[in-house]
Length: 241
Image (tube, rainbow, N blue to C red; front, side):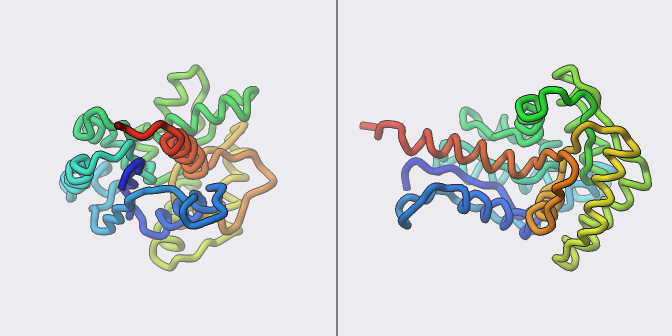
């Protein structure tokens, strides 16, 4: 297969399925042959990212992710996508293993999209796993462009972890009221101008039970758009001799 990219997924599987669903929906295809060429690595047994970030005595996801990158690198994809925000804790190590093959940086692309779509936003709310909050994946990207990160309170983070782990990961259900309340509290109580959905399970919630009242930046949706842009350019590039 030529002109393809690789998705390092399975963290979690339903969130990866949501990413793929949106990617295929947004691909302007009218025949089978007009869809994108990609390889999906649905590595469901990668150890939990948040568990390791919060407690380094837990199993590290890095060896599994490095193995995926190294195996796929031999097939020479044009680029990688990593539809798991928390896994970006390991981004530098993974990019080093990928060598010249770029890995799309979902948090970085999300912050860029906020600057484009919400140019007047100054206070950027962050929701995600405890791992994403603790390792400052989004906090650092927001500060890097001169904006102010707004972190969730402990109560909001408890609600978010319940939605991500108990409702979505364990039961594949979205508690719409809980999801909307998390966003509302970030906007009204924490005074965020826009809220980043910084976990692909939250993106899954947005897909199934969209939040339409408050401004959100859906990290997975941004990744879908950037993936489609790169894959379209790849397809249009001249064939190698």
